[in-house]
Length: 113
Image 1 (cartoon, one colour):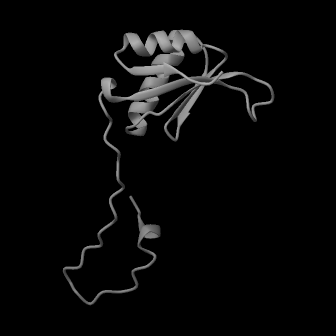
Image 2 (cartoon, helix red, strand yellow):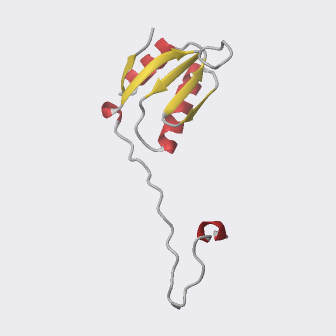
């Protein structure tokens, strides 16, 4: 893979053994389900009146977040997305999502009105 864009700050090195070192991206370690403190709430702000179920508080990698979101979307039979530690499930599925999370061993509770 050509990674020349990542080396734009390096001009030239006279050292024949020089190896450019990239900064490692920090991947947050995923907490086990019992230690997750998830909140399930209904949200309709900035969504043109559409209601979504919002799951917040997930601590872990994006891959694990997307895996959990996929499982929730499949069991609810709807679409959604997962990014920035939040899972968005289309529609009002607060009770169903909460039941699924509790059955999977997550520490979750309902929040908001």
